[in-house]
Amino acid sequence: MFYLKSPLFHCPLVELQLSKRNFDLTWLCTAPSITTYRVNLLQTTTECYKDYVENLLKGRYKSSPKIYTLSDLPEVLCIGSVSTPETLKPSMIEQREIIVDDCCGAAVLRGAHIYAVGVLAMESGTKLHDIVNVYADLTGKCKKGAKTGIAVEMLNTVSSVPSIGDLSSAKALLQNLPSIVCVRVLNPQKNEIILDMCAAPGNKTTHIAELMEDKGVILALDKTVNRIALIEEKIKKYNLNSINVYAYDATKSFNGKLNSESSNEIKPPFKAETFDRVLLDAPCSGLGNRPILVVKTTAKMLDSYPKIQRKLVSNAVALLKPGGCLVYSTCSINTSENEEIVAWALAKHSNLELKEAVPIFGSRALPCQGLTERQRDMLQRFSPDTKKFDTVGFFIAKFVKKPI
Ligand SMILES: C[S@@+](CC[C@H](N)C(=O)[O-])C[C@H]1O[C@@H](n2cnc3c(N)ncnc32)[C@H](O)[C@@H]1O
Image (tube, rainbow, N blue to C red; front, side):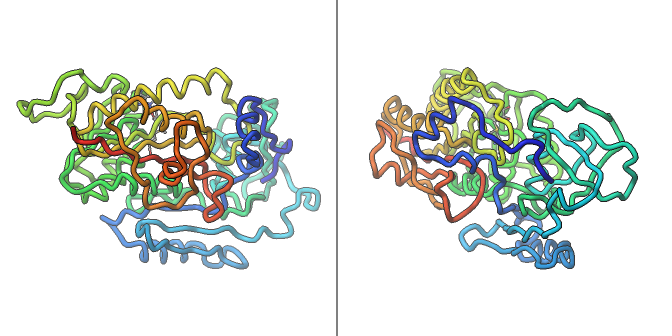
């Protein structure tokens, strides 16, 4: 897998923001070297799943990638990178070429195989079982050549991530490490009432249910109607009973009324102080979703996210019980969606208290007006300076609503 044009990061606003902080933008253009699966501990054990993956990879590479578990996160299985064979140099090999779009290219760099929908062009005369070189078109100039009929099984990529495709099943889900850490920070307990405000496709919702052993009530909202089906599919696949899903705009999820114990039914819009815990995995610019091969985010889009993120935080605060816990997260490394939202939330809602976002796997927060050094330590971000884990960009903050 190669690029038709070297990946260049081109989004002046983001470049300015990040370069001011001495961020290495090439980090965003490259694929994380670790692949992680969240094992469903209600169905299997991490050791069993590790055996399964090891068997699958046996004999496939000269030296197999390292497959390992993490002691503080028992549900996680990590798969390391492979050493890229010498033959993976395009000029040295006479092979036919296939061109894919940038999204497909990014997935391939993370270990995916290629489905017909991502293919832009194929050399005429390419036959079934031919070995092909795959290039990603970063210029957007290639027009679709074929609509159906092609799929490519990847053998190797320049990113050195093993090309094993997505092995997700009821037993384990392909999920980035920070997303798994995020639900651990929420720390859901059995028999609690939990709100997942922006839930689709349900990756974190199902993790919450697993940690609660499917006992309790989880309300999962998402504004995008056609993404609701993705949550429902996962619930069915995982055979979970504790999750109720609603297509709903979470910026309107607080109905302005106080919680009286009169009704047992919990559905949106909710009364104040309904939930023990709220997960706000906010809509964001996604400027952490490595590898970003082409930046499509505009300055206008970047501006729009903090506005909606603040609205969602205010709804979450109203809906939390006193003593309840709010976890705010994004898959962006952009400070205006992260540290600045935390500083704003603490200034706006005097009943919010920042808590340490443990377990900590990432780095401390970046400097931000309104945040003390101690508060920076309590936050967790995954960004170029996170040396311990080469994963996607992400941000996690944990608050508790102070009892009055
Ligand atoms: C980062 S994704 C959530 C990923 C999800 N938590 C998971 O782990 O699978 C953000 C989601 O927010 C949804 N969204 C955007 N605006 C929303 C709103 N006002 N209310 C509820 N959901 C919203 C989007 O449709 C999108 O599915």
